[in-house]
Amino acid sequence: MMNPDSNAKQTFPRVKTPAALPEPLTQGLNAYAIAAAAAGVAVLACALPAEAAPICRTLSNQLFLTSTFPLNPADQAAPPFNIAQSATFTFISVTGISQPFFWNRGFFTPNSAGAKIILGDKSLPADVAFGAEIGPSQQFGKPPSYGMLFTYGKGHPYTRSQGGGTKLHHLGNLSLVQDNYIGFQFSESGSLHYGWARLTVTFQKNVGKGKHTVIHVLGYGYESTPNTAIATGNCTAEEQSQNNMRGAPSSASGGASLGMLALGRAVGAK
Image (cartoon, rainbow, N blue to C red; front, side, top):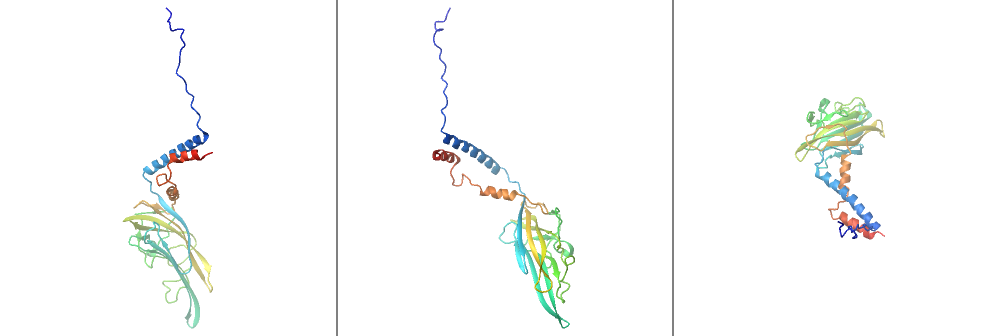
């Protein structure tokens, strides 16, 4: 038996074709999606605990004649170390003959209670090898003679035990023919941090006989994690990355939201 409705016209749900959005609005929404994804990644990164790493900086400070450079790795209120140089040039009468004497000295001086230096021969600052570990196992202390690094020149005839020296033979442990690393520790917020400073010495002709030394402070690094050793000369780009993140604009700090930026672009586009 035939169904009486078999000849009736069948109907189907109507398929609606989506209307095309204006091109400026589409571009704005796409930009919003990309920005939102990036913001999500940034928020996730901020939520994860930051991994501590050595903080390093390159310097180009030069100490001429008698001058001082405060070394302050963690930007504290009082620098934990001073790097200094003294230079003396004078004429002294010895046995009736006036003779010139030039005497140059370098110093690496602890300047706070927790500041100490790795000690070497004569308990003066050691020249630490590149890559060596600087940490709790090292011998730190307050060196004598303000942390004398070197002596160079023709010392005063009445204090020869404290002055004079050549490029290869002098009273300190610093090398005068190559770069040097000085290992140190300092206290910040009650915790110890370990680090290094890189120095080198060059020479300039004096107006009289002899030469003046020039101490070049080339850079430093320290471990941002308390009580953690650092390899001498170890450096990282982590600090630069963190600086870039700190300088990036944030929608939560008074700027327009991502959605408003997208809509604003769509409305403003022509």
